[in-house]
Each structure stands twice: as C-alpha cells, then as structure tokens.
Length: 347
Image (cartoon, rainbow, N blue to C red; front, side, top):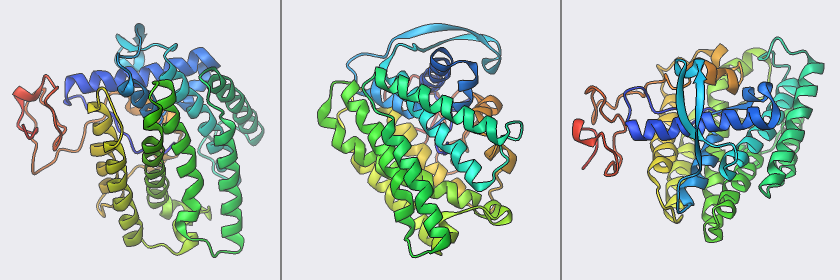
C-alpha cells in the first residue's frame, strides 16, 4: 500500500534477510490460502510488519513450514511463516482491508493503475477483499470494520478538502494513522502482551503518518498531471514542511518502540528504524527518480517485480560491499552472524 518497507537485499545480513522473506512469503501464502490466488495481489511490504511485530513479542518464533518452489524465489523452497500463525493472519486481514480501500480510492481518483480491471471488476474485487479481510480478522479477534471506516472517513475528508479546503495536512493523515495504530496495537493482544498495546498504537500512528506523507510526496507531480487529489497540494503544504513532519514522526516512532517489550527486536528495529529513515531520504532526495509505472501497478505486482531482489542503498559513510556482509549500517548487529565479515556494524 505505502511502500516504506523494503526487503533486505541480496547482500544484506543473511539472518535478517531470511527472517524478512519468511514473513513476506508467509503473508503471500496466507492470502492465497485464505482468499484465493488473486488475493496475493494484496501482498505488500508494509503490512508484513504486523507479522514481524507479533512474532517479536512472542516468547518463541511463529510456526514455520517449508514452502514449495516459487518463481519469485528462483524456484527454490523456503522456510516461511505458517498460514496458521496469528500474526500472518492478522497481516493478511489488514492487507485485504487496506487493499480494498486502495481500490476504492483509485476509482475515486480515476486512477488506471490496474488497467486490466474495469470499474465493475474493481468494485467486485474490493468487495471480495473486504469480506475476506473481515473473515480473516474475525479469526484473530480483529474487527476490520475499523479499517473500512477509516477508509470511508479518508475519502470523505478528501472530498471536503477538494471542494472547500481549510483542513491541515495532519487532519488528512489522521484516518491512516488510526488504522495503522489499531493494527499495531492488536499484535500485543495476539502475543499476550497487553501492556505493549498503547506504545504500539503510538508507533502505528507515527508509521501511518509517515506512510501517508511519503505517498503524497512521491505522487505529487503525477497527481497534478492527472488532476487527482493530493493532500500536500490540497493543504498548501510544501516539501520542507512535509519533511519536517516525517522526521518528527520518525523520531516519535523510534521513541514509541523503545517502550515496547520485545523478546527479539532486531528485525523490528531494522524495518521500522533503518528502513523508515531510508524511505524518508529516498522520497525527498532531489535526484531520486522513481519509476511511476511500478509505483502505480499495485503492491502485489511490486512484490512480483522485486521480491527478494532489491538491494539496499549503501551508506557511503559506514558501509561498503564486502561479499555477503551486512549492509544494515548503524544497527546493533550483535545477534547477526554476518558481523564478523563486514565493517558496517558499530560493534
């Protein structure tokens, strides 16, 4: 949906790369098992963090299984999070609910991103995904109606902003923040750690704000060309102010996560720390050129194009390519088996 979280690259830390892939492939296969092959289009990098958050709070790893060969893994098998894992099912439910909302948003904007799908087909697909998400969510005690309501509220706010104006940009990001907060907080329920819920809800709000703002920054020129709604343009928010809001939210996200009791926080800190900061840098880097057709083809197709193949931007100050060394600069990599072969980890 949002495109903040990127995979650990082919030359990234092996243990983190394997863990990331286990959650991504587990999410994809949970969507398939729960809603059919077409639901795999709802797979996206950002909602897999829900599966990661759930496992990170548990006293033991989520159940794994060996998945069969897949073209996206070079026809190799892999250990993936089992579809029966509560975190994977919650991630799938959220993916379907948000995917349905994204389809409705595209129709409201007249977006042709999913060209082969007519308006009628999109409405039917959105309805199926919404129903499937509700069913999967109910199985783990999560009411996806909360997400559907925030999507409806989002569309209403955008219509009012387009016709009357007067809203601030954070009023427009609020529904996204609330949706992500609800999903993040429910991972504490699934993990049996209710004391984490408040901090995770706060982390979810900051993550949702960043996701919404970065989406607006990256799409601003294209939205203007298509005459589509953009929250920054609608509120007169410049990129400098948007960057300030993103940086503040990233700091808030880090602080909120420090209050969460994790059994293993390494992958969480990588995805919600390092990768979030990189996403902000990418979005605001003047020389950065993002291929618009990939951005607009939908999260599932983005996964098809880049699954497990994306290589992180090397940090010129801290990291350089050293074989299979860890590329995750600035992290506490004490639990990482690759740290003896690279100089990117501070320890």
